[in-house]
Amino acid sequence: MAFSYERTVHFPDTDAAGVVFFANYLAICHEAYEEALAAAGIDARTFFSDRDGVVLPISRSEADYLRPLFVGDKLRISLHPARLTEHSFALSYELVKRGPADKLAARVRTEHVCIRADTRERTALPPALASWIDATQST
Amino acid sequence: MAFSYERTVHFPDTDAAGVVFFANYLAICHEAYEEALAAAGIDARTFFSDRDGVVLPISRSEADYLRPLFVGDKLRISLHPARLTEHSFALSYELVKRGPADKLAARVRTEHVCIRADTRERTALPPALASWIDATQST
Amino acid sequence: MAFSYERTVHFPDTDAAGVVFFANYLAICHEAYEEALAAAGIDARTFFSDRDGVVLPISRSEADYLRPLFVGDKLRISLHPARLTEHSFALSYELVKRGPADKLAARVRTEHVCIRADTRERTALPPALASWIDATQST
Amino acid sequence: MAFSYERTVHFPDTDAAGVVFFANYLAICHEAYEEALAAAGIDARTFFSDRDGVVLPISRSEADYLRPLFVGDKLRISLHPARLTEHSFALSYELVKRGPADKLAARVRTEHVCIRADTRERTALPPALASWIDATQST
Image 1 (cartoon, one colour):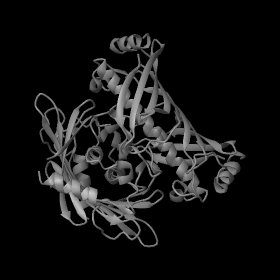
Image 2 (tube, one colour):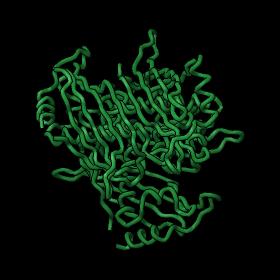
Image 3 (cartoon, rainbow over the protein chains, first blue to last red):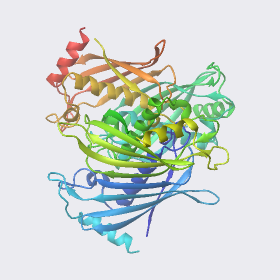
Image 4 (cartoon, rainbow over the protein chains, first blue to last red):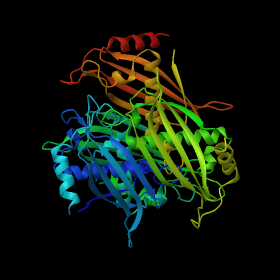
C-alpha cells in the first residue's frame, strides 16, 4: 500500500516564474520518503547519517511535470517502493494537487543504491529498510 | 495571541554540517507567516503577488540561533505581529524544538514595509493585513 | 558546440549527508542554462518572466548521479541543446568534477515546452531561443 | 582589507515575488565566506566538517534589505571579519548590485562562535582562522 504525505506549497519552494521550481518537486518527494521511513519506525536522523558505515545515495531520478504548483496549493504525495536488486530499490511518487477534483501534478521516480561509506562497494540493504520495502510493495 | 505552526525538519533544510542551514531558519519562519495569513483568511497566492500593485518586502531580519536542529526534529514556530508605522509591521518568531521538555531553538524577527510596486513609495498596509495585525497584537 | 559553465560547490548546495543534495544537481544545471542564454544575448530576467505571454516550463527531467560532490569541489557543467518539435527542446548536461583528472559526476537531461501563459496551449519557440538551439546543436 | 566575491543571481535564488528570497541573501553571503576562507588557504570541506572536534556555528544574523535583486543581476559581496572574543568573531557583508553605478542592495552581519562538538563548550578559534581574521581586520 502506498504511503501518503500531505504538504502545502510555500514561498521558498517557488521561483520567479511564480510556481514551484522544478528541482523542488524532487525535494518535496524526498520529504515524503523521510516521513514514510519515520512512519515505519526508521529514525531519519541516524538513517541518513550513521548506519554502521552504510550510505544510500540516489543513483537516478526521473520526473514528469504535468501541472504548475502555486503558493498555497495543497499537495498529497503518494510513494511506492520497489526492490530492484539485493543492493538497490526504487521509489515511485505521484504528486496530486488537492481540490474539488484532485489533479495529478507530477510523477517522480528515484533509484537508491546501498554502498559501504568507506569502500563505496555495493552492499545489502539494511534489514529495517528491506523489511519496509518488502512489506509495502507486496500490498 | 500568537499563531503557532508545526513542522518537521527535513533533509533539504540541512547542510553538510548535519544541521539546519542558518538561512533556512528564516525560510521556516516565512512558512509560519504564510500559514498565519491563510488562517486569517488571506490568500497566500494573491497576497504575495497581486494586491493592486502593492508589495510587502522584508526590510530587515534578525535571528538568534540557540540550538542546532536535526533531520526529524519536531518544531513549533510561534509568531507574533506588531504594527510599526502606518506602512510597516514586524513579526517576532520563536522556534521551539518539541520533546519531553520543549526547548527554545531560535528567536527570529522580520520587518515588512508596504510599498507601491510601480513607484516603490510607501503606502498604507492592505486592510485585511492591518486587521489581522491589530487583532492579533492586542490579545 | 556545447556551452560550458564553471561553478564551485558551496555549503547551501549540500545536505546532512555531507554532499550536494540530489535535487540541487538540477538547480546547478539550470544555472548553466541561464548562463548559456545570457551568453547568447538572451536576457534572463525578461526571458523567464515576460515574453509576450509565452512561458517555457520544464516538462521532464532525468538525472544519473555518478559521484558525490563536496563543498569546495570545482565543477564544469557542459550543456547541449537539441530541438524536439516546433514547440519543444531538450538540454543535455554533463557535470564534471575538475581535478588533476576530470571525473564525470552526473548526466542530466531536461525537456522544455513552449506554451501560451493564458491558454496553456503549445506555441512556437521564441525566435531568439530557436536560433540559439539551431546554431548550437549543429556544431 | 575586505575580501570580495562576485556572483550572478540565478533562478533558484528567487521566489514567486520575482526577486531573491530574503533568506537567500544570507546564503549568498555564506558563499562569500567560503570563498574568503579558500582564498586564505583554509579548505572549506574539512573546515566545515572535521576540525578536530571543533565546530563554528552561526549564533546570530542581521540583515538590512535595501533593494530587490533580479535574475541576471551581477553582485559583488564584500566581507570584513572582526574578532569579538577569544571564541567568537563577526563577519560584516555588503551586497552591491553592479552596474553603470554600483548600488548597495543589502548589509548583512553574522556572528560565529567556536565550540567543541562533543561538549558544546566554547573553545579558542582554530589558529588558521584566527590568523585570517587578525590579518584581515587590521588592514
